[in-house]
Length: 561
Image (cartoon, rainbow, N blue to C red):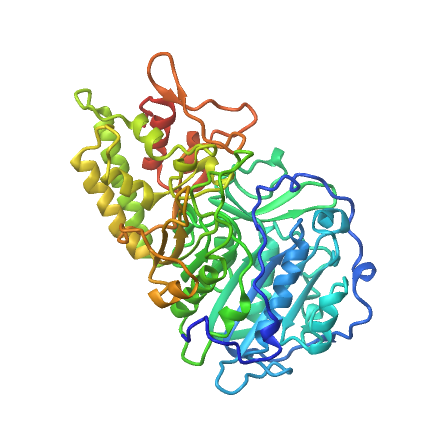
């Protein structure tokens, strides 16, 4: 792949600027209800002539196919519209106005299922791009007229070269879709398989993302209790929220395409073992963030797409572009309102292998680490302190700059910890917690398995008085780093970072340790919050052995089999 810092030759696409937004489900405005959505006819920009296609008799073949599941039915409506516009700008590099490839570039079809929000839902983002309906578009290169309008008008616009193909899905594409329903995702993928085929396929999700959700009927969520990481919330007309689970994603893919080259979840908090294990075998590579996800610079990503580009290289290019775009920004300073731990880099991005053998090996090794931790905990003659390990290596205090344990975000504090960071801490144990050689060996084995799963990652941390060190795996060269003015000071470069595991429960965004009168440590539950650790395997579908460790860590009691 060509270096992503090279000059962008296409004049029109050179207008693309790096942009960002916080695409996470933990937003104070997300819980508000909405009124009935407007009809499409009330919100569509009538001045722009849009290509439409009512029938399609043949399958469109291309080198690359990008299927975008764009759930803008939230306060991210305007931001996801900008993503769509910027993707059209990026296509200027690759395509002619009719969608045919330019010389030297592969053929690309980019199809997007859009579902917008009503005016009240997007008012916190100014509500300027109001298109509350649902539609299918085959995106094509941006035209100059729409580009100019989008710079100074507030209308909902897309390129006049793009084609509205909604009529080809009239059997399921209604005026208003529920993007949090697995049936919608399944219908979209079924429709796409009917009309498109490609050598390389990429499935993209854009919206809020969340940690593990315990989905019940009373919560208003659609789905099952075994959710792993949830994503794509949809606010219905009565104010209730529906959300996809990772299990839903698996179900829809198995029922349709069976496997993609890349699954790209442009959502927060999806980069965890619970999700990567659940999605194993459904794609070669998975791209997402273990922490906050923000918008990508599509221009830099797609200008690296050449005739000989392979999926692994393209996925790595997403991470590389993300790092170059966000390397010097959004490193959270010490938070005055104590809602974020200030020592960590807030925006991460990782490329994971979804190879089933590698995912299952990591699962087994984490289970073996859990066995080693519990074995030593159960030994009455041992000095090992599992609660002490929890307090030393997992608990994070937002008010304390130096308490960073690998990730930061008020949502992440609820129940997520970086598994590589945790294992490295066990190996380097200096907290007098009694970590044994057997436990350290098990941790090293986890790191070896983790290294097979984490293909490339952008990750980092800073010290309180400097820019500190940044970490990346198989990513930026010294030349890249010098160009953006960042030096590497992280010496433990053998540790694969960027994959989290559930470790606690969420109470006001903070994982709190409680020292009891009897000398034990536990977690003070909030009656309104679900104790994540009490049914870890049931909620996430991941390791029951790790779930036992969590129960001991939080309750200091040995769970019964």
